[in-house]
Every structure is written in C-alpha cells, then in structure tokens.
Image 1 (cartoon, helix red, strand yellow):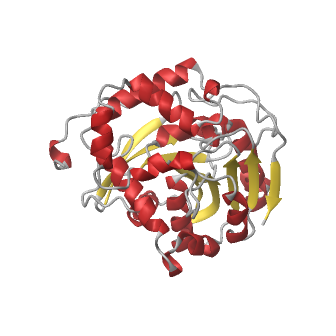
Image 2: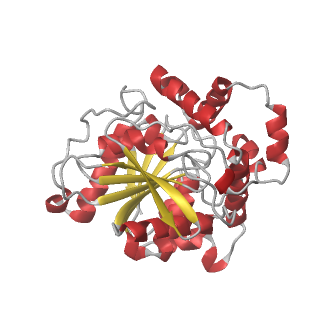
Length: 345
C-alpha cells in the first residue's frame, strides 16, 4: 500500500446543512471529525463511532435530531470516510479505540456521551472499559460483540478477514456499478431498504463512487474485519464481554429484530454484561437503527440523558413522539411497527 503522502486527493465528502468537518492530527493517525454545533451553547458533548465500511455520515440523521440536547461530533475511523489510513497500518479494535481516545483527549471535551454502531460498538465498549473518565453515557446500536453462532447472512462479511478474500472479491465484482454495491449494502444493513429516501440513496451512491477511487478502500475493510474477528478470540481481561462488565457508564443497548449481521439473540446477553443497562428492541429494524429509525433512537437516548444528568443539565428537549428531520439517509415515516421493549439490566 502506498504511503499516505502520495495518495491521490479524494473527492470532497458530503457535508449536510448545519454540519462542519475538521481534521485532527493525533499520534499515528489523522482523523476527520464531523460536527454539528448545538442549537444553543452549553450542551454536553457527544461522540459517535461508525461501523465497518461506514463513516461519520451514518450518524447525521441522529445528530440532527439531537442538536438541541448535545454538542455532537462523529469521527471517521482511520481508513474510512475522509480519514487516511493509520501510519502503522494497524486496524485492530485496540488501535481504533486508541485513535478515539487520543481524539477525545486532543479535543478536551470529555467526558462525552459515547455512541457506537457495529464495529464502532466494539470500539466504544473498549473505550468505555479502559477510560471511564472519558465516557458519561454509552449508547450501542447493534454492537459487534463476540458471537459463537454467527448468522449465515453475516458470514460473507466475516470472510473479508481471511487473507486474499478481499482482492478476490474485488476482481469478481469489478463490473458492479456503485448503484449495485449500495443496494447490496442496504439490503444487508436495513430491515426495510424501502425506507431509504431517493435522495439518501443518491448520496450513498456518490459516497460509494468516491470511496472506490481510494486505493486503500478494500485494504481498510479487510484489515478492520480481521481486527474485529481477532478481538473475538481474545480471552481474559482483554475479551470484549469481560470489558463490557467493566463499563461503569449508564448504557443504552439498541438491537434490531431484522439485523442480518448481529444476532438479535445477543441482546439479552448484552443486558447481562453491561451493568445497569437498558435495552430497546426494534423488531422491524436492521443493523443501523440510528439511520432507519433515528427518531426512536433519539427518544431512547433522551430518556437515558434525563436519568443520567437530570433535567437541569439536559436543557430543553422535545417530547418522545415529536418529529424531526432524520437526514437524507432515512425516511421521515413513523417508527417501528411493533411496541418497543425497554428493560433494565
């Protein structure tokens, strides 16, 4: 892989109205951070970590709905979104967690309300376990924590971790258009892909076209998948489930009933490991509930925020059933078709 200093200049990433992008240089890596300033000053900081193959754009719908409650920043992990690869080529969960920690330390915004989805959920779990001083609350959407019986639909993604599979897949799918790739990703990640608005689909295709021009795109995917699978093999105090037990921050767990990548059955195990956690299950959601049902996730987080900080700290809020703009990646339709189950561990 060529050094980052000679990589071609990537096309500009999309910045939604009200958002800003900035570059943060920390030891070993340069990170792009997407921010959405709060509606008024003094809101507590929030920090969002995306999943495998995603970017900070995945959090735009939720950030827009929470702009009155928190001061939001979402990171592009090394090698994803607009962030170049890490200097040492390390894409392990530990390396991603280290990058997040260094970014939080550099900004001096902690403790933050930390969010993570999928791979980002594993990263956020490790951050919360080893640096409790940086995390005020933890919200995990379909976190990629170790499963012994992986769903059949998740096997192809896991195979990216096998050396040689990513180059082979690249050759086999050379003729696929960006539209075909995006439809495949949405069919895998959404419980109901029809919820994606036409504008959201167009933006996703543009982002896919941009990423495919990056020479390190598949390398970052394969190495991050390998890092995630490797983390599943760790035992003792370094195991992710053991680290989940060490999390002290109030935790919100969100699982989708139609998730094809993280087993819905893992929800109850997560409740048992994250002490004092609360669980929200969305029977019709897939792997990215914060994009598919952003209003519901925002409402659940507001309840967590109220309980963790109190009304005086939270400031003005909207009612749980209030409508907001979920952003271009999701429909503005109603919430899940079934009642949300909320429990506390």
